[in-house]
Length: 580
Image 1: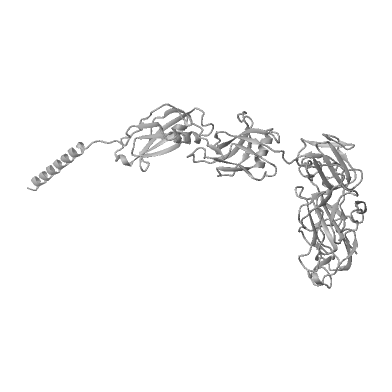
Image 2 (image 1 turned 120 degrees about the vertical axis):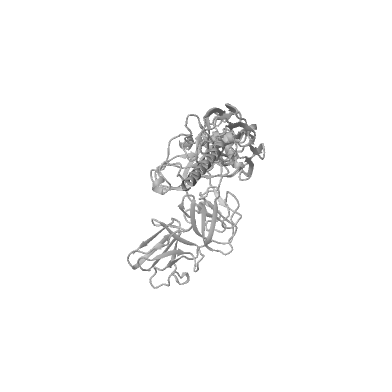
């Protein structure tokens, strides 16, 4: 009985196992997948700008036959330069679908990704990598080869006008605004832009460039800037010419695209010409490097009618034996020298025998020059010289304290007056040797005119300090303030309240800009010169090497040993001394 039951049970088990085997055999069989077969709709694509948004290349591939739902299948469409073995491909992920279409701009940006000229025909290798969504069971398809050439995808440039009339007086005004669209739209790298210009008809064979602000798609040019572009393309000042402007865009991979050209007709003006004075004196006098136009002092432009861009001059100290020339601009391309008063391009060096202050004048049109004593004095009803220039020097003169910078101290009374650089009046010749007198109808700080209006009567007669300031050659101004007193103020005065102007001792005026005082000084302390009994008055600071300045700087230092010293301040020479 037990055996029979056991046999029966085994029979049942066997039957069940047979039935199970039959059930599995009835299910469909799926492998682990296989590489897809890729095909492309074209083997050669020549892109045009009109193709930007259109589909230009369609890919299809076969079923990888994974044993999973198709929505869980991932495909990577990869594109690389031909022969690169997909070492750095551009990759697009497609989920589920077995087709993909690339637009003209997408293909163009793929070409940009590989650098070089986007319009050059190049070979591309394309393939599909299939896998599960979690990247398992990856298979690589066949490689499809396609040749393609892109389009430049350049900026579109527009300007606010196509003709400009420029003048020197309005050179700071805006002349034109350029706007442009981005190049390489959709490119995920960086793109830099510059503006180029060239003479019309030259097809930008030798363009010059204007820097642009990063990220900007607009550029304003002033009349002066447009004039410079025209002059640099050999359009003569005072004539009409035509230039073309365009935008050059460059990707970080070196691909370049050029915008359309914008034509601009330009009525130019004669620009400001600037002259400089390089020579052997520069290093010794603190005027830069010897024979270096880039660091040489600039000559003043005479802006009187008919003399603009014609006459130039400078007041300057030159050591004995100094040699020099003048250059148009900060280079040697156009330079002048001369002998016997005749100016000559590429001529002999100018020379001075004795050290002193000189006025150097040139006339670049009539080719004349003059080198004479450089000086500045007071003349007029309000001065001790009266209206007689011959009585001005030396008793009513100032002193040169820097290039084109004079300081003079004199007594002024009621009446008009001027400053003058010679002992006779201007003769109206407009020649390099003529006298220049200076005046202004405005108050201190105003611009002076050569041989212009008189200075007006001072409100309170007395001793005044007058500064003739041509350090800015575009704007010669004057300043003046009371010179009734000069004090030594600081914490280095023995027995005197520190930095107390009202309690500080006054110097004695000796004439010709010279002040002096003898007093006890404490070692290693500070002081300065103050032309009044309260802060806010005109003062001098230390310019180093025994020289003074009034436009800001460190305090003067007392000697290393305490004791009684004599301090001498010479405003006309711009110096000071401290002696035991």
